[in-house]
Image (cartoon, rainbow, N blue to C red; front, side, top):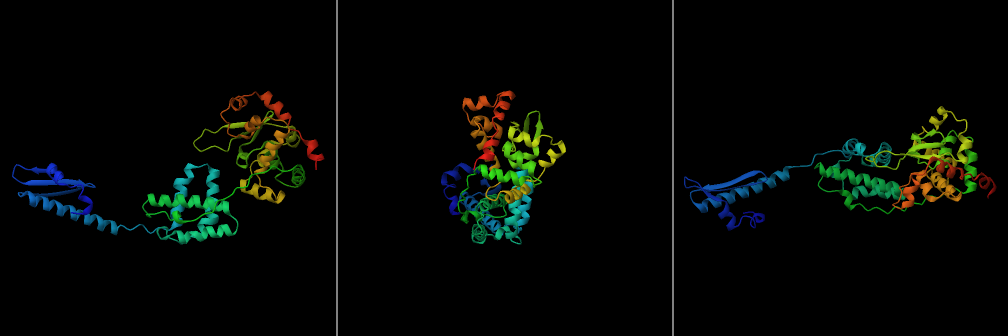
Length: 349
């Protein structure tokens, strides 16, 4: 009897599972993994021996079948592209999907082209990360690791591979830089450069409304507010909209702007805006216009909770945060009027 069954098929088990049929034949039977196993004879000892032989044969057949089962020889990229379409695309927001797809196309696809998923090992994958670290792309390495880990786990579930090679890959910790607001001098210079930029109105909206780049396309003007759909929400959450008062800083730039001009300003792609911003403001990244808005509002005396509502930050559980989210339009407009720092902007060093 196979060793692994000896603790199961004890003397007591045979007593409990042996049946004496009316014709005087002893029969012993059971089912393992839906495979029937039996032994029978008019002699009890012979019936037991036949059962044990059938059990051993069944175990050997199972081992033989497992050895013969080979994983499908599938190209990594073929499986990855299928995974992106079937798994990733329906479960994240379109902009998030495009971001991950860009990482895949830029770093993953070129490296894994022509490689089979069942032949990949940690030692074969590690050089990809070494290359990313060498050129200083530590943040990209984190995203690549995240995607590869998910893809290989999906391959295990599909029985294409038996282990995740990413378990043996070493990655370095990415230390994210905290965003910082533009100084008054930097903001002056930035606004001056915008006079010759086709993205002038776009960046003005981001600077004086604090919206995220992914939220731009949803922006609209209504009465004394800029309305925008919150971008920092999961796919399964109900889409909410927030309104930002048109401050004196913004008002002077959007006065007389046509609906067509506004639609054009909010219609540019996120990647295009990020690239163009670097040429205008090399020492900052685009998201820091949002940091600048928050900083300027607080410098002008707007309460932190109100600024959080304008920016779509997650409210805490304090009574103050919950109350501020329900203040009237008149109150929000009054707070918005505080945000006028023109004198400081053009007179400070």
